[in-house]
Image: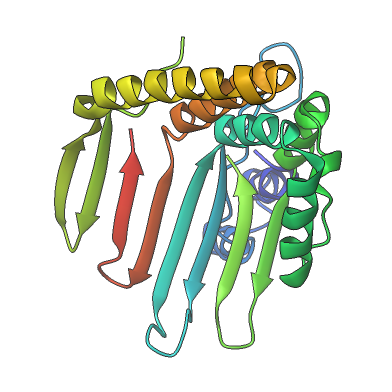
Length: 143
Length: 87
């Protein structure tokens, strides 16, 4: 349970807010991803198993009310990084150039398998939440 | 031990179909073995030092294929998006 939700429930338990007000406050927090479960030995949440990308609302002119929901296993990311590490330098340069064209400045040759767990560790706390100008809502998170 | 995808579930508008991908395993394995043998022979003749790298790439590609289990893609207009799940 995250800090905000716990605080609201504490306020409800202490009688500082009514159930309806607590419901409104919880609703205002949004229906974000459920917080990861804590590991038995400490306060750190368990490792995420999936990367989720959600796009809701406007997709294009033909799909004003569409939805895209992609779930990618973390194992696939791990295997992909290991494969990318084996790519010759010339191939990496081509991938970097293609990514740069799309506005993504990442040097894939610098992503090494030994750094992979650090990347996954950082992804655990990552949540990207973007509201677009045409009503589209993009969320990226791990679960 | 990791296994390649066994089933792919495709769903549209409440209608779903399970595709038994595991039936293709023997053919994929046969193709992989033949490719590895052909690549090994070609590399031994043309560039012997690249052989270990080629084997590593082959193993890495197989791992990526196996790791697709659990992938789910849901896309399209509401209320009946197209859903593909790899099991």
